[in-house]
Image (cartoon, rainbow, N blue to C red; front, side, top):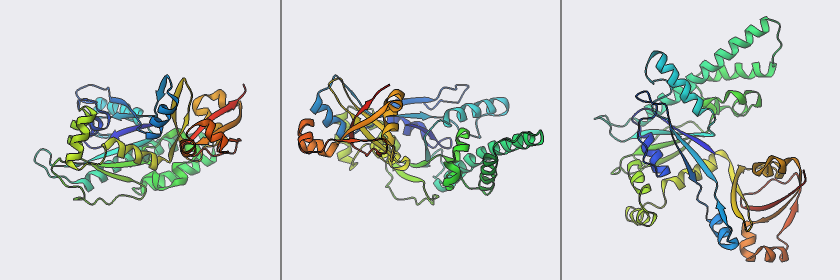
Amino acid sequence: MEIGIVGLPGSGKTTIFNALTGSEAETSAFQGGKKDPNLALVKVPDERLDRLAAMYKPKKVTPAQVKYIDLGGSISSSGSGKAKQEAMDEILRLLRPCDALVHVVRGFEFAGQGPTPQEDFEQFESELILTDLMSVEKRLERLEKEVKKGKKGDPRELELLKAAHEILDGGQALRTSEEIASAPQLRGYTFLSAKPVIVVLNIGEDDEEGNFRLELPEGISFLEIKGSIEMELAQLPEDEAEEFRRDMGLEEPAIYRLIKESYRLLGLISFFTVGEDEVRAWTIRRGTLAPKAAGAIHSDMEKGFIRAEVVHYDDLMAAGSYHGAQKAGKVRLEGKDYPVKDGDIINFRFNV
């Protein structure tokens, strides 16, 4: 899973990035001529993986991972002239592959200015919509020229693009239309306003949660995070950080909350493979059929899929061992039409 951290300048994107990843990155990405974003891989915390590792004692334990990308600046306000266009193109290149966006909104005073989270959210949302509108208009122009030259093209693509243009021209994000956002014919465009969004209100360390009420479009998730505090805690040893959290009444690290919300928003689940060599968590979309889940491990396993030997995590723990689960009739063979469930432990049988 790949998540881009975006927002207006001064919102604290890099602070949130450091809070989530335990990094000490500087807020210089895409500024002063530098074009390297801040990148970090974060292990997805999962107590089930820890318990499976304790049971199997493997040589290697591999959790699922989330890749976070912190982009300095804003989509439409990076410099001027050629430099602005180059920075914008680079930002778009990095954002388009992302599965979701974390939109950081300022909830603290900055440079003598009080927070205006609703206005800031709407301004950046407008930037996403305008960027997509420009892309759609360019593509429609090309398609119309091709039709004039006698090329047929894809009528369905043209129809969907015109529908997308109507939505964007009306000031709405493409994520408001499930048909457009998930249309296979438009997948290659990777529209930014079609991506799922989690709005993170970055509030000050002395601020109380719930002081701001944001009116957000349906389908956008919302979290409040004390970015500066969470950044400091993320850079402490785990036992010290846990003690400070208890003292401040924080139930869990910000990264736990964000990953949970990311999985929920994107409809993601985890299944596991176990053995003496490795215990590993794999991330797939809810409803993924067994052959496709096997393909997450290796394409050959999907091509040569025969059966999936499945036991659920809860059943394995209740039985105390894999052999115990077999004796209790909890291990079963599933075929190509089986939708993998969250917490399934699977051994794929395949032949290539």
